[in-house]
Structure formats: structure tokens, C-alpha cells
Image (cartoon, rainbow, N blue to C red; front, side, top):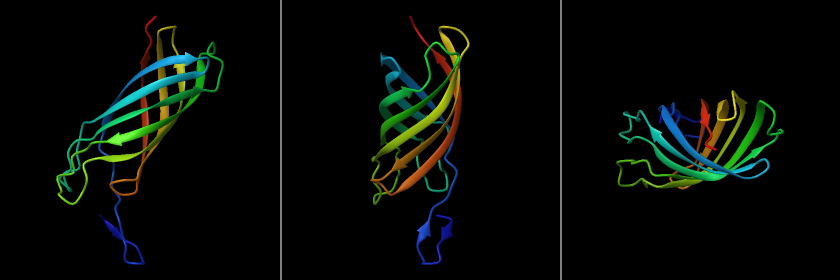
Length: 143
């Protein structure tokens, strides 16, 4: 924790270490996918002795634009389980919460698209936390 509020409460502020999200999704209806992300941390919070992040986030993705367009806007609603090792007896290694990601996908062709997104994750069990991230990636679709 880096800061103390005027009321004497501790507020922790830090940068979320880099991570990779791997996602499987399946289109169940026009404009609706079911999905599951697996988040694997590349770095870890050395100052607190916390392990690399590991999270599973199942949910749904809504497409707001016509699928035939090359540029599409989407939003996700996901549950979140975070199993990052905290290495502290008084702190749970499990956390639950929710995630939302909003972004744009550009379809290069039928099987490959590129996306840019902004995401928010809220954890509520271990302690109340809000993490924001920006991501970019490639979506590969199989027939």
C-alpha cells in the first residue's frame, strides 16, 4: 500500500503486471458469443511477494454491429475467478468478481481479425479492487 487517505485508511495503488489472455469463444446466435478467458501473468508483484496472476473468466460477448461489416464494436460481461497465490496466511488465494471489456474488431479476412479493447475487472472477496487494462490482439476463427 502506497498511500493513506485523510481518514487514515490505507489505499493500495500499483500497476497490474503484464499478462496474456487466451480466449476460446463460440458464436451461439447472431451477435452473441459465449467465451472463456484464461489470464496468465507474465510478471508478478515482487514488492508484496505475490505470485503470477492466474484467472478464469467465463461470460458472453455482444456484437453491436452487423457481422458482415469489417469493423465491429463489442462488449463482454464475464464472471471472474482469480487464483493468484498471495503468499500470506491472512489473505485468500481465491477471489471472485466480474469483468467487462469493450472493443473494436477489424476483420482482415474471414478467418483473421485484429482487435483493440479496454477492460475493467472488479474483485470483491479478497478485498475490493478495480483493475483497468488496455489490450490488443489477433482473433483466429476456424471454419
